[in-house]
Structures are given as C-alpha cells and as structure tokens.
Image (cartoon, rainbow, N blue to C red; front, side, top):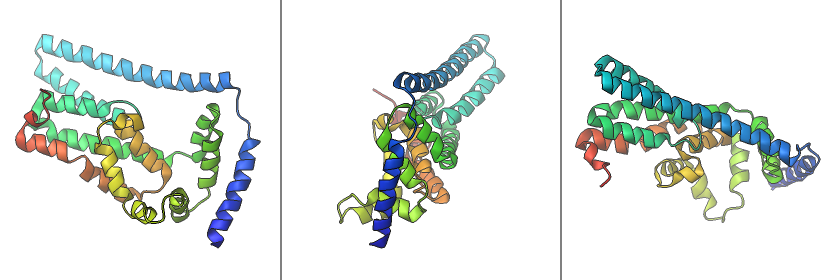
Length: 241
C-alpha cells in the first residue's frame, strides 16, 4: 500500500510538472516531427531504389559475383530496415524467401533475429528524455507525464505501474506471460499498425519491461516458424496464390 501511495504522489507531482513544461508551438513541433519522418523515409527510398537498380544491372550483365554482392547488401539493408519502426522489413524478408527459396532461409532467419534484436537494443538504450522531446513536439502531455512517471522507477515498480489498472485476475497473467505476448505480437497479421516488428521490438526495449537475454531468446523463437517451414518444405508454403 505504501508503494502505491508513493507512486500516486509521484504521479500527481509529475503531472503538475508536465503542465508547466515547455511545449513548442504546434507549427514548430509538427514541422520538426515531419522533417524527422521525411529524412527517414527519404533514406529508405534511396537505399531501396539503388538496390533495385543494382539488381536489374546484375541481371542484365549476367554477373554471378555482382548478384552475390547485391544479395549481401540487401541482407544487410534488411537487418537495418527491420530495426526501423513502420518500415515493412518483414515483407522484404518474405520476398527474399520467395526469390531465393530454401537455400537462403537460414540467412533470412539470422538477419531477422539480428534486425529485431538491434531494434530492441536501440530502444533499451534510448534515454527517456529523447522520447519525451518527440512527444512534446506533438503536444502529447499525458504521454509525457507517463514517461516522467516511469523514468525513475525500478523494473519491478515499472511493471506494476503499467499493469495496476488491469483487472485483478488478468494482471498477474500479463506480468508473467509478457514474453508470450511479445512473441505473439511479432507474428500477428497487421502488426504494421503497431509499428511492425521493428517498432514492437523498439517499444519492448524502451519499456525496460523485458530482460535483454530473455527478449533476444523470445525473438529467436518467435521468428523461427516461417524460415524453418521454408527450409524444410520449400517456398511454396508462403507462396501467395
């Protein structure tokens, strides 16, 4: 009870603090946020366009070594794109599996694990103040207050704070089964609205609710079914008809 009372007092004081925080004018905040998104989108577009051009040139020339180089770069780009929220990196992985079949399935699996683990580690190392500044640009005051409440809390207190509004019977299952929920989120159709695999992994890391070793183990197991199926049964198992 004393823990909850202390947390509630901290919450009230931090909400009051947030109300007096400096939030930039709407036009300044939105412009700054739009510029960030535009830069990321432009970088992704340029990289993918260059890869498409290089692949077409390799096919025209008929150079196996050039194709191998393009494929290697594509795998590296796939790893990096997976770590970017809302970028459809998984679709690139499926395209690689359809294009190259079972032979490349182990490579795609390793690249997927590396990409999602990278997104998790970036999220885990990002300061709370960085996200606070981004949310402030969008004038999301409640979200900023939540960030301020979570920042000083320990792992256990943070988990308790985020689940204390759940029904009493449900909260223990969510706390204990959060790794299963994370694995399910990586695999559910339409997870792009949650930020895709990279966005989900980033948020998992940023929340500090998942131990690094356990999160990486979850990723290892969660992304295994599709590459393993392709490796054992061929690309026909994911071919769209």
